[in-house]
Amino acid sequence: MAPESRATGAGSRDAARLAEAGLDGILVLAKPPGPTSHDIVALVRRLTATRRVGHGGTLDPFAGGVLPIFVGRATRVVEYHLGDRKGYRATICFGASSSTDDLEGTQAPVSTPAPDRSSVEGALRTFVGTIEQRPPDYSAIKVAGRRAYAMARAGERPGLRPRTVTIDGLDLVDWDESIPDRPVAVVDVACSAGTYVRALARDLGVAVGNAAYLGALSRTWSGPFRIEEAHSVEALREAAGIGPAALRRLMLPIEFGLERFPRVLLDESEVEAVARGQFIRPDRSVEVREGSDAHLRLVDPKGRLVAIAAWREGRIAPEKVLVDPPARPVHA
Image (tube, rainbow, N blue to C red; front, side):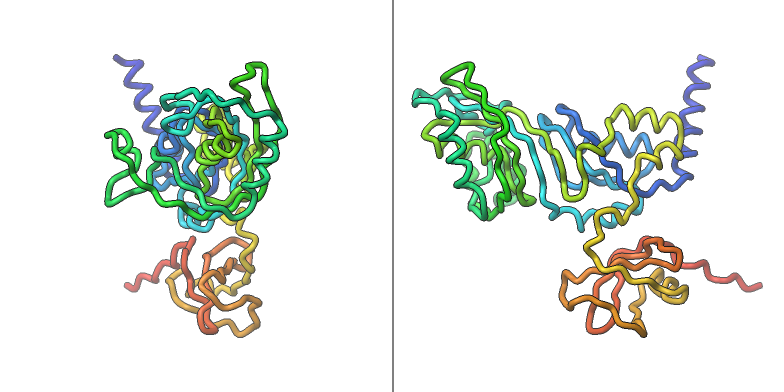
């Protein structure tokens, strides 16, 4: 029992040390196929001993690739990344449909002739641009308070309405027809947030007079976050075993990817006001247009991010404050 007790004590000390470190930043992980996005969040929460952890866009369990994880104070900027455009490498299998539009569903082979490479390339071009896309029946969209996938599993048709999405690019990078009636295409996809690549595979099959489902999927980029810079789960575990400094080396700063927001340098008095959530009226020109999306990055004299703010009627209104207000003096 003694060795187990010592290990448990060491684990508790490590957790306390990490919690005390106050880790704040963005971890770009390469999610492996298998775990859910929530599983990865739970793992990061445990390894960093940080309660506030969120992700920047769900990946289906069978999919892998870029999963931005926001830790500590960085969770306050997740909303500014949820609309980021995405990139995927999709493996699309022809010759059969799937109940879930991917490899995990029940497949139904079709007898129509399989498409050739040129017909698939031609069909891909018709999907580029702003299109209407019907989400898969097996999706997390709610219909009258129920998840669509729960209705589909119960044998009901969710009746999901088409949604407007934008496909920026579709490039056929590989074509395998070694099984003539079941060819496979590998396609690079660039698209808006909210696009279902499963639905794209399904609709591509219909467009070529056949059927298709998504056989594999990897997210190659999400906004500014790229797979080339993503860390493996194993690297995360190793860093957590070393300590807070090693974990920090894996993290990007909170403001990474928010360069599109104009930068406003504050003086110390303005920093204190913003830290308390107060509006400020700068005595200098701020180059930003009016509107609900006119966000600003507020930084202190040392260049550290203080808050994300909005420009409202000539004043700067803090939206997400990332620093603590100064402690009030204690009078004897």
